[in-house]
Structures are given as C-alpha cells and as structure tokens.
View (cartoon, rainbow, N blue to C red):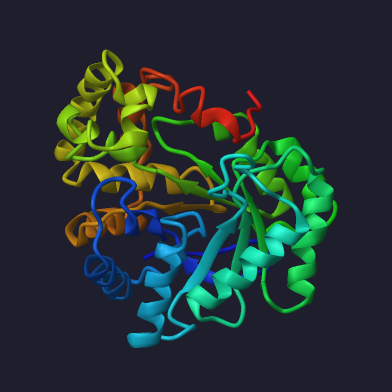
Length: 329
C-alpha cells in the first residue's frame, strides 16, 4: 500500500483510507459485527487512515470504532479523522458555533475513547460565522491538545486560502472521482499550494465506478440515494451504460473496476488520498488494491476515452442536498 503524508507535517498514512459512513444504515443495513470485521480487514490490508463523523448514525460510527480500539487495537492502530457541524436539529442543521464545536468534540473523544483526535474537520460551513472565526476555534482545540490537526469538508478554494491564513489546514475533504471532477477546477491546485491534503470521498462514484453498481431496486430502499439525480431515471440508465464501458475496460486491464477508479484518483496528485467505504471485506480488498496500482499513460488515455470529463448524467446533489457544500465553479 502506498503511503502519503496527511497534511504538510502530519503522519504518513495509507493512500487508501476507509470512510466509515458505511458503519451506519446510510447505504443499507449495517451491523456492528460486520463493521468490526471491516476494521480487522483494514489492519490486514495496511489501511491506516479511518474517517468518520459525529453525524454518521448520530455517533454510531464513532462508537463502533471506539469499541474496536478498546477490544482489538489501541489508539495507535489507526490515524482517525472525524467531523463536526451537521446536527439533528431541524431548525439549525449546520452549526459552526464555538460552543457546538467544543461540545461535540468532547462527545467524539468519549465515543472514540482517545485522548486526542488526529484530524478534526468542520463537516459543512455555517454561513453565520466567517471561516476565520471557525478556524480560530478549531485552532484552539489544537492548542488544548484535544486535536492534532484540523481540516474542512466541501469548501471552496477561496475559503481554504482564508482559513490557511489563520492556521495550517491539514486536509480538505471533497467528493472526487471519475464521475465528479469539480476539484480539478481549483481545489486540487489550492490544496497543493497550501500543503493541504485533498481527501477524496466517494472515489468510486457511490458505486457507479465498480463491478457491482447499485440497481434501481436497491436504490429504492435508500432514501438519500433515490433522491440523488444521478440515481434517478433516466439518468440512472445512462450512467449504468457508462459503467458497463468502464467495467469492460477494467476487465481488459485485468483489474477490478473499483481498483481502477481508486488508482485514477490517487494519480491526480501526490497530495491526494482516497477514503472509499464499503460493508464488504471482498470489496474492501478491491478498493485497497487500487492503492498499489500505477497506471500507464496509455491506461489513463483509455480511461478518458470511455469516461470523458462530464460523462455523468445528473447533478451530483439534488437541490436539497446542495444546501451546505460550497460551490465554486
């Protein structure tokens, strides 16, 4: 497994991490036993970067990780990132107030059972607060020894530059894949300039870049997915047709489609990391294999031929799902 530094002066971690939203029922039923097995497999595969959030199952994902650390590992087993600001309060779904950040940090520390969080992200921007003010609050957690590094999720390049002027930003998390290339239009460049890691979530396009993409029947049981434009007809059928072309190419190259998709993301820059999620150990092995692939110029050209920029049908979010991520292009 390739190793990459997380932030300008952070720890070396596996280039392929694990996104623990899958420890909740977001993409279908999840069990704590299955989640523990995934963490066991991460150890076997050399995956050392685990990403979660207080909002994933309203603490369930963090609790599973905390239980695993207590039963099978220890705080040194993984570099753990978690996130804050998405709430269950319908009146204030995004909260970046210093009081909320502090309160939720303490709760995350307790659920994870660690003395300090390796990387603490602001999950979404709250426009009531300037990003400089939020960064100052997060920097205070570093000074207090409760957090080792800070980051932001789904922010614009301009916001990164403003935050970086206040305190080093170790990582920016953004959706990035062959089906979502917006970070190419400024974010990947701004991260490189700042010495900030770009951590790509959904690097296999929520299944569209795998050998087993979600079909309509399964999607109908996933509230978030069935509301997403890319997984509603007629876009779904069009996207599955492109998936078939990509799967065929991966087969010709002798790799799983997911491995190929992960390798493409990682070759976008030495500062790029991928954090796919899955409930399947077999699929996790395919994802991890992408961290060991080196794609030739010919392979990259062939990928571009079957999945040209802009191939995906439908926006990556619905109007409601776009409520908090920052748009910049």
